[in-house]
Image 1: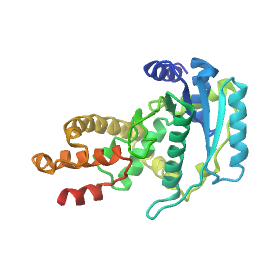
Image 2 (image 1 turned 45 degrees about the vertical axis):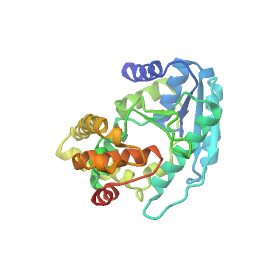
Image 3 (image 1 turned 60 degrees about the horizontal axis):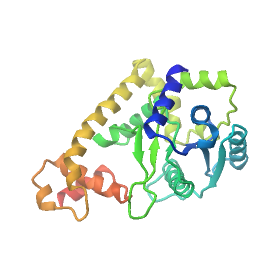
Amino acid sequence: MGALRAAVERALAELGPGLYGVACSGGADSMALADLAIDIAGGSHVVVLTIDHGLSVGSERVAADVAAWARSRGAAGVIRRVDVERRAGSGIESAARDARYAALDELAAELGLTAVLVGHTARDQAETVLMRILRGTGPAGLAAMPTATLSHSSNDGDPSVPIVRPLLAIDRDAIDTYVADRALPIWDDPMNVDHALARVRIRAAILPMLRRENPMVDHALLRLAASAAEWLAVIDGLARPFARFPIDCAALAQHLPAIRKRAVALALEHHGIGWDTTHLDRIDRL
């Protein structure tokens, strides 16, 4: 419990005084994070944000229960319902994630939040790395989820509210222990056991198989992500001077492919435009 609390205390201290949003689905990870944020910062400085995707039976009731719990702890509880629209080449997981972060962006702007905290843990990070490997990611994808990133709440791509992941180095056992010790209410999402979803299959089947080959595979995936993030920081430093539209193609052409592609990726990200390695390869060949 000490490492868990210390992680949240450190994140809030780095953010400084303000009004913190905590994205909370009602699951163990986000409930532990919300409870700790309220305990550390005080309820008047926390808004518990529940995004109702409407994808599970009873999701509206769960959202209402989470908001009621937040209010019982002295924090504000806010619910935002979103419509999840599938796009060509995009699964329901990706569409739900995009809708969720768009809603969090909107709420952060509306409520004047200093940051939005999300409850991703070490297990989520390991799963993300493995999922991206299976899909053929590049070096940036191997870095997986950063501990903090900037959202883009406006159409012109101006960065706004930080998205912070204080629990990214915390394993699930610590979360479960905290939840049990605090007797926190938990609302399980039926989608977490839906094997039609890639992340569920990775969690329930692929990772357990890999653990039989290497019991430390989760730690290996986390080390890979950390190492990739270190290298990515170097490449970003070299690419960022060129990462603006219109791109100075003549100057950028003097650099290595990794720098050229990353400059384009950063420019696209700044304007809220998605990309994958195939897009970058095609652009680089122009």
